[in-house]
Length: 243
Image 1: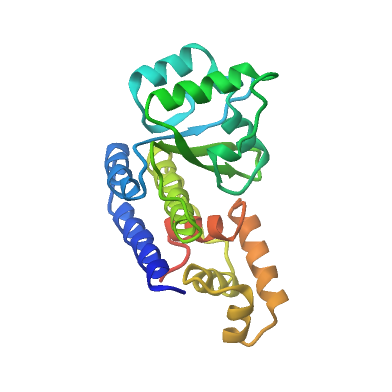
Image 2 (image 1 turned 60 degrees about the vertical axis):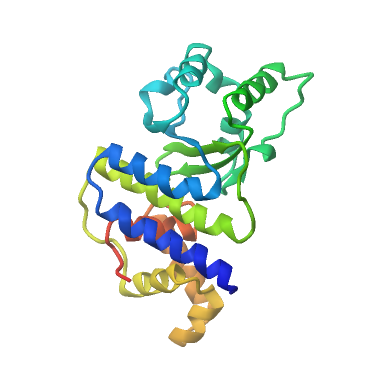
């Protein structure tokens, strides 16, 4: 791992530690604004994804969006045609807005949304889909005019985004629960949080890579996590593991 990658990892964990001390939604918005600006992000929205009978504004958890753009988006029902939201429903991995493909000729409404977002300074973006086993769908979508999105920064952003979402949800709707993880699942997630692969963790614990993968899969299922990174963030957020 390069020194630059370690810098991004350290930055991510500093952000995580800061979030644990915050108590209000506005505190989280301020912390996100400071930390995500280092990567070029100027605006973000954290929201559930609406069903056809729902309105998206009732599902927004946190936002730092240009208000004129926000109300235009809401008033015109842009969430129904937004290509970023469409891809968010289909993907469990973070993606750049440019990966949300659409045909401007056959889908002019999608083209209009992306063009207008750029007019408000959101020329580029990065989106984290959130999918729970109970069907819950949400996302953290972030935008700016010039972003630092590289193979080195994306893993740090992924962890930071997931943790910010979990912290916001915990503050807005706290729900204490017993620790559902076994000793091995907690141990496996702790090593994953430190950047170890399943093979690395297997070697450390003296078990096979397949066993570690099974523990991670079980932890993901118990925590309604889409993947290993999501499980680590959720376990840290709810203090199910300690570092």
